Length: 413
Ligand SMILES: CC(C)(COP(=O)(O)OP(=O)(O)OC[C@H]1O[C@@H](n2cnc3c(N)ncnc32)[C@H](O)[C@@H]1OP(=O)(O)O)[C@@H](O)C(=O)NCCC(=O)NCCS
Image (cartoon, rainbow, N blue to C red; front, side):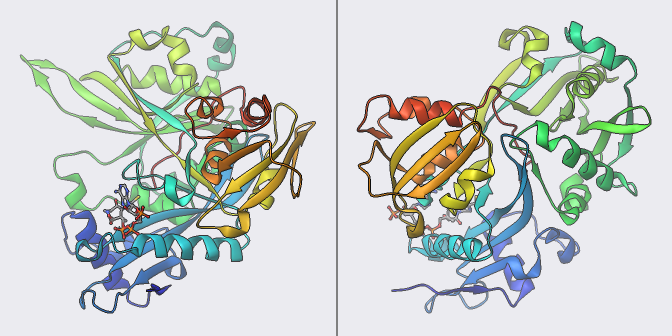
């Protein structure tokens, strides 16, 4: 049975389906606010013939976003989000139909890459998404010392300033700052202005006893050079203040990040600083002397990347080593990518061309997504997730795709 996926025509039904799937508290908060950053024409639905009447059988949405790639280009991507299937309609192929639809629409729109944050790690590999960025969550004690002798000169003129995220002009400043540093931090995903407004929109049911999100800006020479979002949480232990300050992604040049890091481990009434989004090669761990200087460190997947159009995506980024390999690509959900490709990188520039030559490697398109932002994929051969037919060919590919520094994690979307 083929499943029809079509644009949403009923914004209230679309939101109500999402609220059933995600079982959040439903209030009379302004529905348009909740859908910020998800344009009307980027919401899609499935209604199975025997599905529920009052809600959709499935929904998904696409945020128009930009992502920086190795080499510094910043390209449009489809930010897949709001994926949900009604509990009565699950495991009947609704998600598979929506993924097929998403990939075809994205390709038709001329967008080469789709990206997402996965609710569960087992869902998206089968649809050709690779886990492309890992992130740490790090707890630091109050007064943690950061050592970075070669940044101190740059740091000298950097000041930090705390503001409300919802104050006028703040999200615009955050976005401008993120766009400015994105080329130097591949993997950075920059949302639309509406998406930033969504970050600052905190309805009462999300707040309860919490303070509103604040933003700490780093400034130098009269301009913003970095920021992070944060929120303080109260706690008293035996009459001593021991709250937690929860800190989002640190954005900015290295000296700006150092200024922000020093400030967030020195907040009155707080005992712990929880940094929720620290890249694998983020300077933070080097500044403190490694993982044992943290209170706790956990690692998980951040951005998942899908090459929607392999031929268009391959040359968008730069490469740090040369390679020339013929790859048999399997792609069940985007058949235009399937088949044999000659993937080359020479003097940083890449090209992907169809070929009839014998394949050096056979792999799923998800492997190329996993390596697309520079994350190391060399281990996938030993893991048995790649087949090598010419010895050394996979190492050539993995070396070309890998970057000296691991890619940046992204803010959840
Ligand atoms: C995850 C979800 C969207 C799956 O939708 P669905 O319509 O049941 O999925 P499908 O029937 O199209 O399944 C397609 C394939 O994915 C597999 N799959 C689906 N969900 C999976 C999961 N959570 N873990 C592992 N495999 C999963 C199915 O077994 C099926 O495999 P097959 O091709 O080998 O038969 C649905 O369970 C849901 O809405 N979950 C809650 C919200 C959520 O997590 N959304 C994702 C946001 S990132």
